[in-house]
Amino acid sequence: MTVEKKKKIIKTIKVDVDKCNGCRACELICSAFHATPKYSSNNPARSRIRVIHEALRDIYIPVYAGEYTPAECPGRDKYVIDGKEYDECAFCRASCPSRDIFKEPDSGLPIKCDMCESDPPLDEPMCVQWCLNDALTYEVREEEAEDGEEETAEDLDISLESLVDKYGLQKIADTVARMSKRG
Ligand code: SF4
Ligand code: SF4
Image (cartoon, rainbow, N blue to C red; front, side):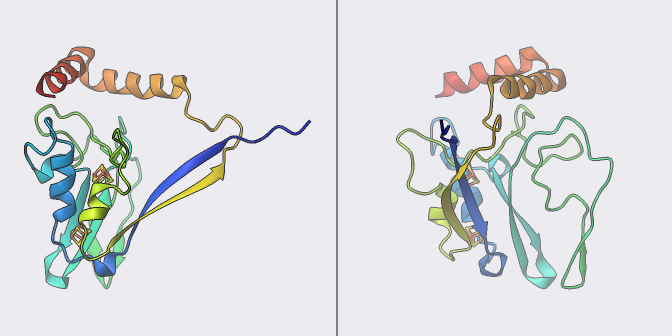
């Protein structure tokens, strides 16, 4: 008997750094879309995409917020682009204890790009729609999932557990209560 493999959907936003002019429309719309109520405010500090800027060389690099990590990296990387050396953590996607980026400014809780999950779903994430220079391109593809690859309830428990360890259950509960009240 052939067992049909489970499929998984991979959503990607391709970033063409050469096309980014640093307008920061992506930051504005992301923060507005995730405000409660929606579009009630915009604040790039709440955005799940941040544009790293090197003024002298006119370089802008959009970076998406990735996973929360409870500990700093023991090893670091340096990037050299067009002869300019960038900070070890400049392009990292993690919400990490060693820096303020990708943290909700009021609560300090980590934020992560959720590809603008909403109901009904969007055709394209907001930052892609608002990038008039086509620096951001949305792609969706289907792949076969490896056995046990799907996210399990246990995975969710582990990430919640690390958040509770770091911030305390009361702070997380207060933040969730505050956000639901605002919504
Ligand atoms: S909206 Fe597009 S061009 Fe503007 S900063 Fe963001 S990625 Fe760059
Ligand atoms: S995909 Fe949505 S959540 Fe992610 S950075 Fe873009 S606007 Fe923000």
